Length: 350
Ligand code: SAH
Image 1: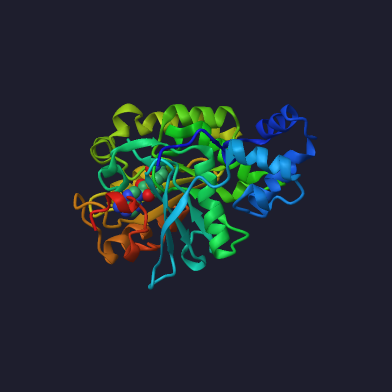
Image 2: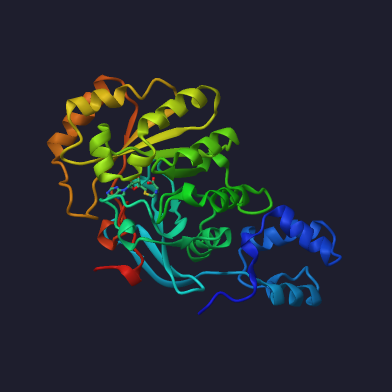
């Protein structure tokens, strides 16, 4: 199915909805009402918006689409309750979202992991999404509709959001930031900015913009290697935007910012030595930075997963050096819903 002429209403922010209503002679409060229907009440059609006149509902329906994604598959992990949602876009692409349950999440609550692109251009060798290649950016409406579906199906009201699904959020900066802003509207989902985390592999321009604009969301940066040469091998983005430049940028901007920062670090057999721990230590001179250690999930055969003893030694080393760490539980691996395993059914090699 091709994208129709109609626009996705969820791609529009408050100003745009507001100016639409004024262009058709409606009062300004209609905009708030619309956001309330779309997110707080999470309806699927304009017809349900009963405080709008029939005529207005018809007009909206002739110009806009409420739900740009259709749910294709919903899988629940028998081992840990992680839920994976496979969606189909209007133009026939597949994207995935994941609902991570309480005790496994970093801070013990429910977290929805959202995709920002169809596929990804970053080429990280350990990640299944990279193997799809890049197809296209998701529109704001497609980013938000993932959350609408998950909330509607689960009755979920209060949750964290992580932009850690398929894609590189900072390669789709405008649509991702706009989606985060809309999630925060008090007359919509009203999700606190402290509950929204944007994860990037380290797109320097995106980070600069994010800090310059004083975006209030939590930030996560995927480091995964402390040695630049090794990092360049597993994450080609290092060749374009060396992590040293990101550290320099953080040095300039972080002391005056209010963001919380997580450095993500996949533990492999070859990147958890004492030297790695020492090099990591150097990055933790600012407060509000936490190291999030991620167990390597099967996504590629390129690397070996470390044994428990090697992990324990690395963790001990970091603790001795007072590096603030958290260890991410691997959730949803049995339904290919864990970090680095999202590929969309259509492209899956399962
Ligand atoms: N592109 C963004 C967000 C998506 S990846 C980013 O790079 O941050 C989300 C997290 O999953 C990243 O920290 C990434 O390093 C991690 N990840 C990717 N593949 C993985 C794998 N096979 N095992 C464990 N974590 C993985």
